[in-house]
Image (tube, rainbow, N blue to C red):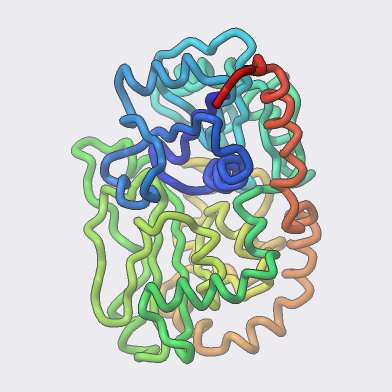
Length: 366
């Protein structure tokens, strides 16, 4: 059986990675192939079979595949083999509107993406709140698998503490340092602006370092769409993790998250660690640029703040913040984490087994 994986346009990460590591260990004689962006080739383990992110090799791999696993649209010209199965895992619980529900998109973009949606056989949903929104936004008429996200299984794993220690050590973060993961989402107007200008962090990094000192470390992680639109930031007190392969490792390594409207909030909430929302452009993002599926402020499991000094002040009293938002945090997890029990991968095993059972059994093999 041949399985082709793609994550975030050629990275070794996310739900496809979790499924690949599960299925390739159990079924090493299958052909497992990854779409690979050369800018992220160093994140792929040695021995992993890859094809370039674009071009005839990728098209051939997709057209030969028995099972395709992707976490976003495959914006390529290819024809799915008859009988092949395309599992679209997607990559987050939506707060901000997506696909057909967005307030604005460049002309022709959604129509192009719809070509890929038409190929999907199954769409993954992380929770009951997301299921109807994903179906309506994509106009998807196939089966939605509301099983949670395999990428998040590690967050509830017995190995979580060990992974946390390993990741912090690899990033050079001492045990007594508070690691602050900062995950701003992308802005459509920025992304599609003429001249592809660099993306700047809204948080005042100089003030963060000066105010919080050496017992804090800032871990900025830009959205995958704009990773290459910013210069890597390596300086004292800052560890740029935008190019770190997989986000769940960082959720374990971090002690607190700052985000705005990113779906990372839903995954990080599984850890029950504090969340701070730096919503400096809330009204314009919500009302004009993208739009939300629900009102963030009354549901947020942490303070929704408008200025960088407010965010830095909130970081100085994380214990108090955790106490103040204990109940909202619990309610947030009840709504969005009810399928995140560490067994999403188990619940998806039947997809692999079903496709595998259709393959001809070879006899006389050495």
